[in-house]
Amino acid sequence: MVPERIGYIVWVNDLKAARNLEKYGTLHYVSRRMHYAVVYLNADRAEETAKHMRRLSYVRKIERSHRTDLKTDYGSKLPEDASVELPDSEALSG
Image (cartoon, rainbow, N blue to C red; front, top):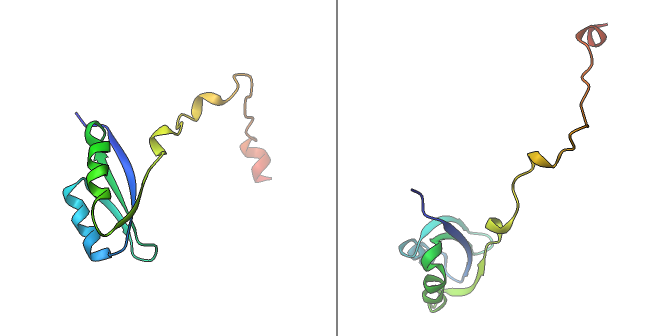
């Protein structure tokens, strides 16, 4: 079973030190240009782990990702009576 994960965006001062974030969770991405890292943490201990990461000297700010709060079920919103009519193959050829 896969544990529920929460994403955090960690703004850092030092990119080399940002590699140390791997010991707190799964380090998914590090932006060299904008100086942030995306870290996924287990949901049951996410707040506690985020508090520990805030104490690090190279961490400027931590933001929680709201991706898990977004609704991703798009298929059921189509109305039932809206049928799509496709053109015949003869109409396309000539």
